[in-house]
Length: 358
Image 1 (cartoon, one colour):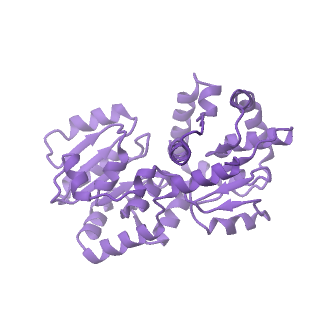
Image 2 (cartoon, one colour):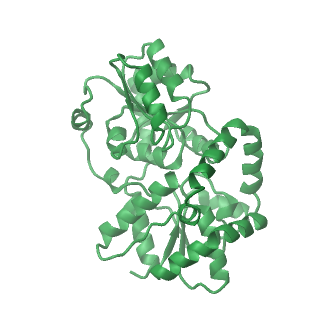
Image 3 (tube, one colour):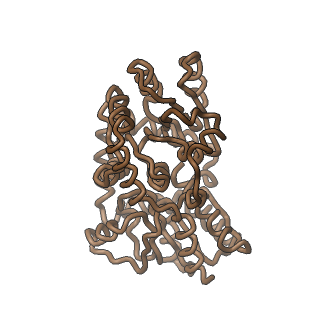
C-alpha cells in the first residue's frame, strides 16, 4: 500500500509542476495477475505473521545479496510481458519504480535494448540489495545516510537525490490543528491518539484499543482499520458505547487525521511514518516485523521522533508519558519536524521531470 501511495503522491506532484504532463500509474502485479493478487497479498501477510523468524532469515539473506540473480530471473519471467506492453503502449520519457520488483524488470529490459531513463524511489529508510542496479539512472530516497549503504555493496549510483519519500503535497501547506479537529468533529480540547495499522489494518488494533479503555488513557482515540472492513465492523460493535473511541475503515483523507492527531500509534511503514514526520507528530511503533519495519523503526527511534512499544500493554503507558509531559512531547515533535520532508512529493516530482528532459 505504501508503494502505491508513493506513486500516487509522485504522480500528483508531477501534475502540479507540469499540468501538461501525462502520467500513467501501473501496478505490475495487479495487471499481470489480477485474479491472484489478493490471494498473494493474503498469503504474504499470513506468512510474515505466522513465521517471523523464517521471514527474518529470508529478508536478511536477500537484503545483503548483491546480485539476487535467481530472484531477478523469476521476477522477469513473471512480470516482464505486462511491463513491456505498458511501456510500448505509453511510450514514456521516463519510467519511475516505487518498488524493487518492477525496477528489476525494467532494468533487465534496458539490458535488452530499452532506452528510456529509469528512476528508483526507495520508500523505506533502508536499502535492500534488490535496489542496487547499474541501470537505474537516478535514485530518490528519504535520508542522505542511505548513500553510505550503497558503498556497502561496492556500488556508486549514477545519480541520486535526497528529496524524500514522496508524500501527498498537502503536507507542504500550513494547517491549523484546532480547525482540522473541528472539521473532523473531534473535540479540540482533548488530545487525540490516532491508531493506524497501515492500509491493510495490520496488528492487534483491537487489543490496543482495549488497553486504552482498560487503562483509562485521558484522550480521544481514533482507530483506522484501512481496507480491513471486517475488522472495522467487529471493533465498532465491540467498542460501541465507548464515547472516546471512534472506529474507522478506509479513509481517503488520512492526511487530515494525521494533522489532527497529537500522537500516532502505528506500524512503522515508510509512507505513514514519513507523513507523521512531515506533520511533526510523535509516534509509538508497534508490532515491528523484521525487514523494512525493523530498519524504519531504528531510524525513527534513533532520530528521537518515535518510541517502540514492546507489547500492547505498554502503549497506553507510553502514550501517557509522551502526552503528559510537555517537555517530552515538545522534544519528540521537534525531532519529527527536523526529520520530516513535507515537500518531498514536489521535490521528487521535480527530479523525475528533469530525468524526463522537462
